[in-house]
Image 1 (cartoon, rainbow, N blue to C red):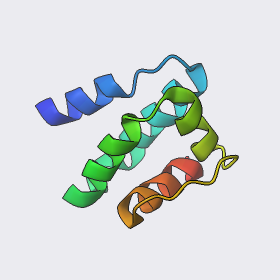
Image 2 (cartoon, rainbow, N blue to C red; image 1 turned 120 degrees about the vertical axis):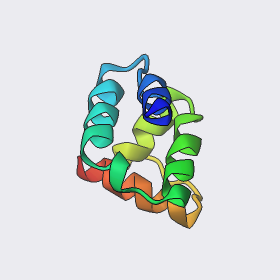
Image 3 (cartoon, rainbow, N blue to C red; image 1 turned 180 degrees about the horizontal axis):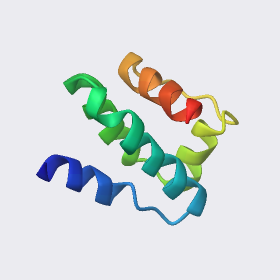
Image 4 (cartoon, rainbow, N blue to C red; image 1 turned 30 degrees about the vertical axis):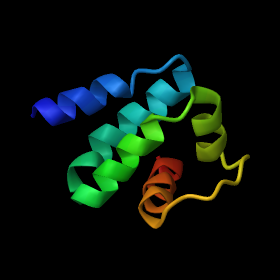
Length: 78
């Protein structure tokens, strides 16, 4: 449970749009991610807000690892 609270806290961002999408993602998908996907999500949260939002909005292409790409696709579906 502490891990989920840590991740939930990291999802609080400076952009309202990110707060909404990441909050929904945590509620809908995070518990079903495997360990590698959870680690990939954690790495996505290390990105600056504008870059992360551009990736979610699909306006910026980036070379991502497979796990990160899978998590990003789930984020885009939220």
